[in-house]
Amino acid sequence: MISFPFWRPPSSATIEAVYGMIVAQARSPDFYRGYGVPDTVTGRFDMIVLHVVLVLRRLRGLSASTNLPPLGQQIFDRFCQDMDDNFREMGVGDLAVPKEMKRVAEAFYGRAAVYEAALGGDDGSGGLARALARNVYGVAEPSPGAQRLADYMKEAERELASQDPAAGRVRFPDPKAFIGVQGGV
Image (cartoon, rainbow, N blue to C red):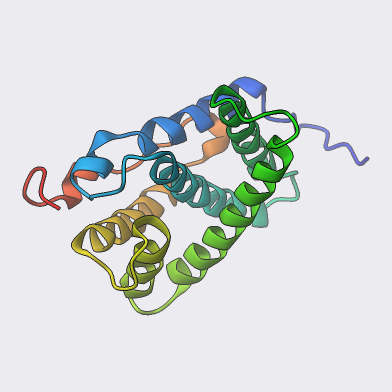
């Protein structure tokens, strides 16, 4: 392994802090009340995935400018550990957890690819809203909630562009700013 003289791997405290901020944002009641995201295990999973994708996208931009090992892999590993822990807390047996984790990985990579393509696309937030409608809401056409979520993701990407998650902190936009009428779906 090549050693970088002044590089130190991010501490587990940094990874825990960033991942904790991702989960805290994903649990914001505004997504479930004001955006109409289903308040279910799947809906909460989708919100965590959405925020992990945004942070990983930012980290990928940072690692492209350096030769340092990516923090993104450690964030993804923490996400996987969290999902594993949650399955076990929900009573999924040891023999079934690997099968469930395979489903989580497939869902994550599928959503990440679609969100990446839509975030990099030229159609504003239309393609992103369609992707969110399918993945988060389970419908073919974007609802007002899916459009709000797409606008939120675009703004989150803009805000994250000026941040360095390796510093142990990420800030996301306030989801209420995209609700319009308080509590409306």
